[in-house]
Amino acid sequence: MKISASTQSPPQADHRRAVEQAKARKRIAWLLGKLLVYSLLIGGAIIFIIPFMWMVST
Amino acid sequence: MLQQEMQSAGLRRGKRQKLGRQARREEREFYLFISPWIAGFILFGAGPIIGSLILSFTEWSLLEPPKWVGLANFKALLSDQFARIALFNTIYYGLGSVFLGVTVSFLLALLLNQKVFGQALFRTVFYLPSVVSGIAVALLWINIFNPDFGLLNQVLRTLGVQDPPGWLVSPQWAMPALILMSVWSAGGSMVIYLAGLQSIPEHLYEAASIDGAGRWSKFWHVTVPMMSPIIFFNLIVGFITSLQAFVQIFVMTNGGPANATLVIGLYLYRNAFEFFKMGYASAMSWVLFVVIIAITICQFILARRWVYYEGDLQGS
Image (cartoon, rainbow over all chains, first blue to last red; front, side):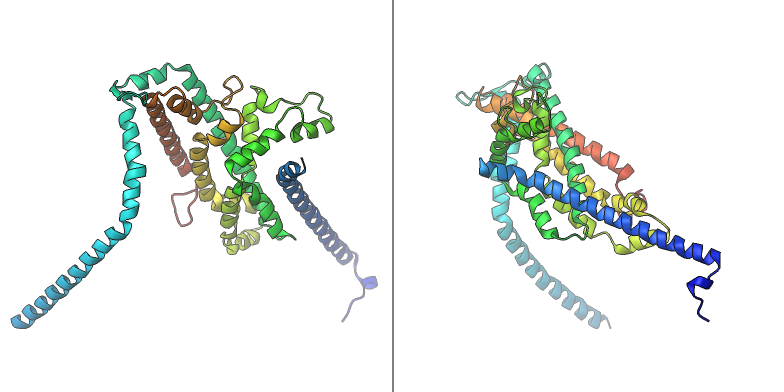
């Protein structure tokens, strides 16, 4: 028998909410991680390439 | 029966003789093929090494015949204050450039090991400086470190630093500047780390995940132990290379200011080709060799505590 959200008992609803929150937290952590990786890569690449560019431009 | 055994023994002897002839021919061919390398090694490798060892016990100005002085060159080295300064600076440069280089290149390899957009481009950018010739790198960084119009001080002034360092003209900052510059060429060791990271079996991470390990835990308990032989290799090679540093220091500071960047390689060159003390310079090169060997042996002894070889039960 299918149980709709409105008829769920409170412990089940809490559990579902906790799972959703954990998923959201995981997603935010993943996004922050990607942001950090890209920031470090782009920052590092700029630091590594700038001496060449500066030398060419001067 | 006996006849049969004798016959088979004769056959075996014949086969052995035949194989022996073939083996001898292969041996001759082997020596023939490697003879250019052996000749090159004796002429340009072993010969000069033995020659410099003999010269280290002599006094030779290139103009007069060498004069045997026994251990006088080595005794003079002990009381030479410039040699002490050079040894200190060499170890300072070696420790700084190796530890900073190993850290930066390992971190870069970890970043480049992620599945990111433009991975090949990033790898190229980070590797590019290590294919530039040493002299070109030195000339580039002389301009970057220029206290008045150099890029680094321009950036520091923009960031609000009122009195930025003099870098290559300052005795306090000249060596840190050279160490900083050496990190720019960390791409070579980064590639080795990257190859090592990609060879770590995925099932180790899966097993760690099943055991409940997080990212940090996987890094410390899987990545670092599996990478320890590669870190060790880069430490050994890095120390050997940095203790022989010469080209960039010669071009950028020539040992100055106030001997702040006088390293053994440079002092050795000066003694040999500026002061024409070939014997003394040879003695110095042998002392440098002994220092490098001693540091390498120490590293191997310490490696037993932290380097892990897969399948080696003694490793930890």
